[in-house]
Length: 203
Image 1 (cartoon, rainbow, N blue to C red):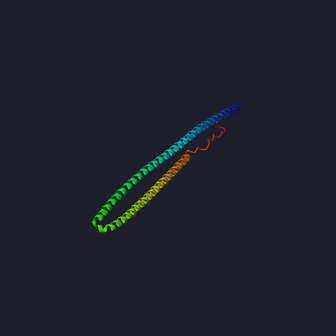
Image 2: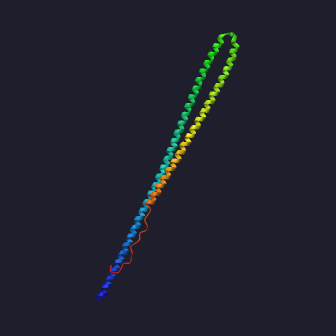
């Protein structure tokens, strides 16, 4: 009789222990779920902040690129205008100098001998025509040099923009790789499994 009662007490004790372990397992699982949800929420917020930061960086980079482009365009316009003014002044000075030289030569020839008056007039016409041709050649040469300069500057600008595009793509690729690696490192572990509910007799 006492042995049977003792067995019943042992069974009751084991039943309580199983119930207590089951409750502890459920509580542990609920705590794990709550902690995991908070962790996932924090990671989602961190990723959202990262996306916003990257967007701001892209916008700032684009703004800097546009600003640099505008500065370059302003500099180019000013530089071109300075070159045009310099070339124009230089051409005017050269033309004036040549004209003065030519006038002196013509005056000297007119003052030489009256017998050469006709020849001097003819020479004057020839020299004026030559002078006009030289002015045309100078103008054509200046226009050709200006065209080549603009073409070189255009190629330089295109090369600079292509370099910016390649650099931007490379930075985006690196950031994507770092983000993927971070996600792989932060992947959640497998779901938690509670301990075995079966308790051998006598434990």
